[in-house]
Image (cartoon, rainbow, N blue to C red; front, side, top):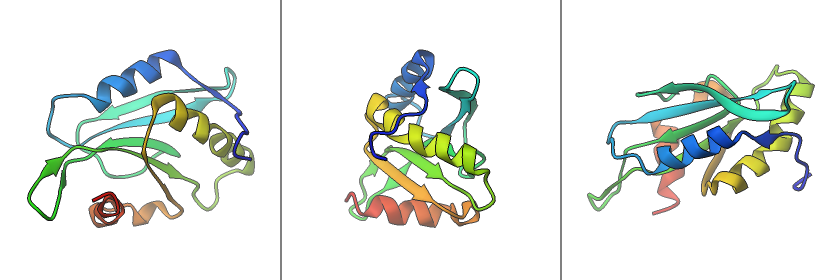
Length: 132
């Protein structure tokens, strides 16, 4: 299933995510993505300035992360959710398109979460701690 690609990634979304990665702002922000089933395309759904709550199966966070040595970085985190109760068809479309999105936008900090209520700053900081 690693090579399964159900949907392509919209070119405008790729451009938006690349700009988002290198933005100059220092606040937390998120881009929410969704799949347009008719076009079989991952597209932009919403943008938020301060956000840490998963409202979609695909989300990128530009998150202000303070390292233990005092350094501050702003990693681009991709969060994929497959919530309990999601329709199997929808889960398959998102799961099948995840790798294409990650490769196209060259995302390196990729996290999966099952229960969206578990998405907290503590959870994200713990995940980012593995990257040093």
